[in-house]
Each structure stands twice: as C-alpha cells, then as structure tokens.
Amino acid sequence: MERNWRIEVRDWARTLLLTVALSLGLRVAIVEAFVVPTGSMRPTIQEGDRLLGSKFHYWFWQPKRGELVVFRPPPAAQEITHAEASRYVKRVIATEGDLVEVRNGRVRVNERELNEPYLDAPPHYDMPPTRVPDGQLFVLGDNRNDSLDSHVWGFLPQDALIAHVFARYWPPNRISGL
Image (tube, rainbow, N blue to C red; front, side, top):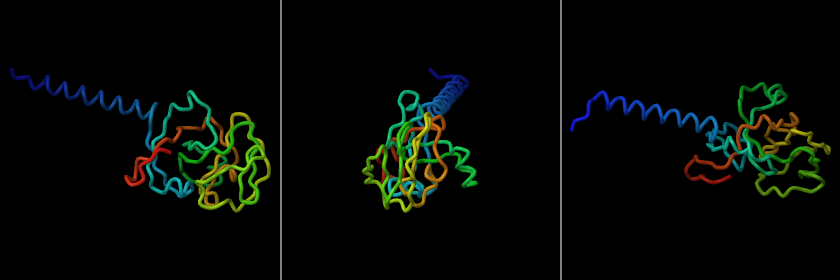
C-alpha cells in the first residue's frame, strides 16, 4: 500500500520538530557543551578542549572542593578583565565558611595544605587568610600564575554557577571524565 506523500512529509516534520524540541530541552536543563578559550586551567584542560557540564547538578548538591565548574563571571571579574567572556571554567577551592590562604606557593584551606597534583606550577603570589562568606565560593584556575580568578577578583556567588563539569569530549585523544 502506497503512503500519501503529504502524510510522509507530516510525519517527517513531526519527527524533526520533536528532535529539535528534545535537543533544546536537554541543552537548557540537563547537559550543555562548553569550549575552553584560554589556558587558565592548564594542564587539566587545554585551550580548545570541549567539555560537558551537568546543568542540574547544583539543583540537588552543593559545590564541593576540587570540582570543576562553569559559571557566569561576577561583575568584579568583568570590570578587571573588560572581556566579553560569558562563562568561565575554574576549580572550586573553598566553599562558604572555609578559611582560605595562599602562602609560600601552597594553598591552605582551614589551615591544611591542599594536595594539588593537577598543578603545573605553584602560585607565585600570596594571599592572607580569608573566610569565604555564606553563599560564596573561592575558585582558582589550575594554571595559577596565568588565571584571573578569585585571588584577583574575589568570591564567586554560588548562584552564578551554570554547570558541574564532568567530561571532556574533544579532542578525541583526550576524551576523559573530569
């Protein structure tokens, strides 16, 4: 039995519309892809790496030390950089209530040195002990000496978080969970 071409076109159109709607829904609420334009997270993430971020993660869980996050830069960061970047990727170093300090090339949280095997080089700057305010985070790039982050522009409001980074999908030779 031959199908009417109008029915065939209508079926294809419905399928295409459903596919587009599902794709947009996934991107808005579930998972989004991000491209890293700078080297502030080297060596963990290279320029041009493409990452996947879970957008619903922080609906259920609080940010934890060591997590990689995508966020909208706070106004202080935008004022310093004068850049048009709409998203940054950094590592959570301290959460609300933590005491964070950088001294002699080492980051200390609550008076304990962090074990940071992901760093290429220790920071060449010091920062006095500072308590992270409620609802805020302290984030740093893994490339500590070439990263505009909380040590420069201050704390990150938790409500600026966009996604929890969980994987790198490009380039193919560096596909991995993060």
